[in-house]
Length: 319
Image (cartoon, rainbow, N blue to C red):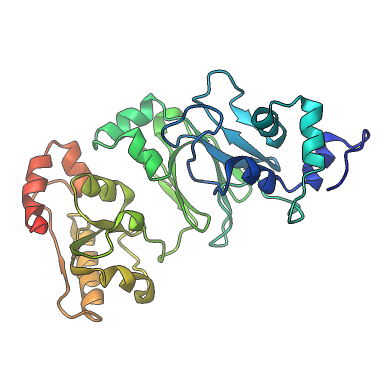
């Protein structure tokens, strides 16, 4: 493409070559902010990722015992074809890319979808994360399946934050480069996001047609209810609803729609507003549910040991 030249620096190679096309050559189609499987070892489940850092793409695989954890485009070509460093550079410099590289390239996992650029650096799930999620009977394999990333640092505009490990900070990566940073153990600034009211979670796991759908207000509640065998989607919070043109595709797939928000005043009021909103378009198709437990939401009910009570309360949805 460009022809290798002895005076061409490594930095110039990275500026001249479309890194995304090199990575697609090795990994196939991929999306930053999603887990993938490693092609370099026996890998039964996705647990690796590709991300931007300081203008370079890196493949990260913490499960690799013999390779460098973070591999740039030169390293992945070396491993794929068993080449020397010089041979890999020659390969890349002469690789026929279909598109010129985008420059400057944001160091990003997520882009400025909602006028706010949010970036984050994933890390392996540590003991703090395992302890936190196990309270809700949510496993690391489910987190990986749902594109939940333990987060080493995150960046909001020009400010970088390094949370303490005990904060169990995590990122939820959505399609269209949307992301939500969650810090469940702190009292202030628990969430940062560039998602919008039309960002609906959990839609990939829905059947095409079925009898009952639950709408919840968070990822955690969605995963808990999904683990119990129910059809669920979730909004970004109780205070804003998707436009009906974005919501009705899921409403039409089910005979009945149940809203299960927090078991407090704000949650009950929001639940009533949402059922009215849905019923204004689909008469009597939606109704609110109120947890019979003292806990405010399904996730806290699981944490408190009220799983059977929750299952019994929702059992009518299985008929």
